Image (tube, rainbow, N blue to C red):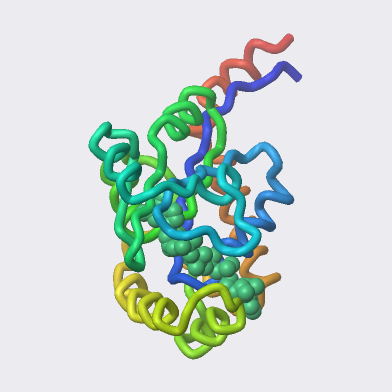
Length: 206
Ligand SMILES: Nc1ncnc2c1ncn2[C@@H]1O[C@H](COP(=O)(O)OP(=O)(O)OP(=O)(O)O)[C@@H](O)[C@H]1O
Ligand SMILES: Nc1nc2c(ncn2[C@@H]2O[C@H](COP(=O)(O)O)[C@@H](O)[C@H]2O)c(=O)[nH]1
């Protein structure tokens, strides 16, 4: 069969810190090798094992503010006391090339993408409870007790904003949550709007 043109899908995933976004996204990276992943800029210090240009572009506050003034970001927000932003160029490139692009961003950023681009599917991941969220953050052992407290306080606010999202997933058992996430993405990728030429191509075949 002749190659069918496909438009790219934008997938925006948000969750309170520690709910399991990065864990779920690493499974998507394994199963959807053609997906592009938006790499954000941040003023946060790198965690052990994080690599500049793979996990984030780690920049100073001064550099971030300069980029912000230059209109470099598709969206940006102050999250848990640090700045985070999505480079506009990566989004425009993915849209132009019809590539699927996934964003791991907070609720404020998701709202901006919704307003500015007016496209994408918006998925919110819940932890099974706030106690379990705290347990996961403590067990991850990447943040100080003060930072964990800030992240837990922000989790309550983020959960209250969850109604702007298209899909909700509770990440209790990882396998079940991942199956739900994967199913949403597969179903969304099959929407007719992503294959505008398909009926014509099928009818033209001899
Ligand atoms: N379903 C699950 N059950 C138990 N532990 C989990 C589950 N999902 C993720 N975790 C663990 O919880 C911790 C937090 O997960 P992860 O780092 O993926 O969260 P996150 O939402 O990306 O957080 P952040 O926004 O701070 O980056 C990790 O140690 C991870 O291994
Ligand atoms: N608005 C944006 N939020 C972002 C972006 N990149 C990441 N994030 C969110 O920040 C928090 C904290 O992340 P962490 O890696 O420090 O734990 C989390 O909710 C991310 O989703 C971004 O470009 N814009």
